[in-house]
Length: 360
View (cartoon, rainbow, N blue to C red):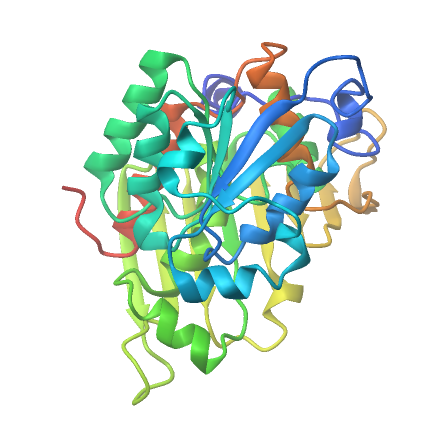
C-alpha cells in the first residue's frame, strides 16, 4: 500500500514491536551489563525539561560528571533542586574538556539551544538537544551536517517518540493495517500561567513553537514533508503580552491532510492532547498522549484485533527513560539512530512554517 511504502522509507526507522515498555523491547539497555558508563554532562538548566537529568543519573548506563549554568540567578535556583545535588558546577569550557566526555544534554533557554549544541558538536560530543530546535534553520542545518560528518548523534527532545501508543501506531503503519492514511489530527494544549506567558511571548512562534513541535514530530513521522503549510494564528487573551495563544496549522499532502492545533488557554488541555490517524481500513486514536490510551476502529479483523471499535490498554510510561536507553544503544554502536537528521530538519522546517517564521 502507498502509505505503508511511504512510512517504511520515511525518516523515522522505528521498531514494530510493542511490549510492556519500549525499553523492555531492548532488555540489555539498562540490564547492568559489565561496561563503562557513558560519561555525560548537562549544559544549561533553564529549559522547562531540564530536570530530565535525573533520568540519566538514575541509569547505570550513564555517569553524570557535572553541569554548567552561566547565569548566576539560574544557577543559584538550580543548586536548590535535588536534580543537581552533589554535582560539580563547571564553566562551558571546563565541561567540554572533561576527560572522556561523550554526551552533553543541552538544556539552555530556547534562544541559546543552537549555540550550545553547536559548541558541543564542534567539540566532538554527542548531543541530546531539547526542543524546539531554535529559530534559525540554517544554523540547525549546519549543526546536523557537522554531526553527520563526525558520526555524532543529535537526539531531539520530542517527548512522545517512545510513547507506547505511538510505538503501537508505528506497528500498524508498518504492517499497513490502517490502509492508506488520508487524515491526521494532533492537538497539544494546556493553560499557561501569566509568568510563563511572559517568557513564551519573547518568541515570535507563539504557543505552537513551544508545544506543537512535539506533535509536529509525530505527524512528519507518519506523512513526511508536507507540500503546503497554512498557518492560522490568534490571540485569545489580549492586553497582557504579545503571545500568540491559539494556533492551528493545516498541512497538505498529495494524499492526505493533517491539522496540528495548540492553545495556551484550554482548560484540562492535558487530558485532550491527542493524535488521530485515519486510514481507509481503520482509525487509531491516542488520547491522552501523556497517559496513553488507544481507541481503534477497523473495517476487518487484523491479527488479534477485531472488526469494529475497541480500546487497547497500554502500560504506564515515564518520559525520557526510553530516549536515554536509545542514546546509550546508539553511542555503543548497538543500533542506528531511529530518527535521522533529514527527519529532524523536515520537522523544524514544518514548525517554523506553521509559526509563520522565516526559513533563512
